[in-house]
Image (tube, rainbow, N blue to C red; front, side, top):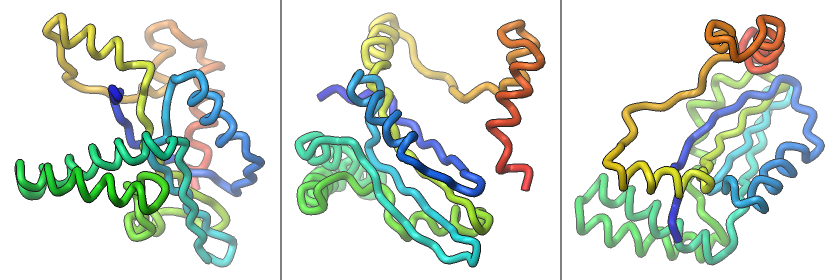
Length: 182
């Protein structure tokens, strides 16, 4: 299986009122082979500060085992070099098979996000594979290209290049930063 570029996105939700819309959109993107959620952790903090954690992934069991081996290999490679790569691949595949999916995030991993989550809100940590980008990435590599950087562009910056009107950018900016203003 070719894996596309993987991105970690951390999202905040003020007064979360989930009705399955985000999960439905991630499933739609999965069905269109656009993105896959390798792992996700939703952390809910109620008005009293009590926390609830939930995992989400839309990988099949076979994909979870294969990606588990790759993620385990990356972790092992970073810790123990080539020997760690092999041991991590085996451990990652076994863990994915036992857990029924890839668990990149543990509840303990959320610790540094939890303190930042205001009461009566939530955060989502999403490890997403951009499957759509595999052919583009491969074409760039064949042409001798490589990534120098990446990032999301603030909607207000798009006004400067004429891609959005000031009103459209303000609406997007307000949507994207509503919870951050607290």
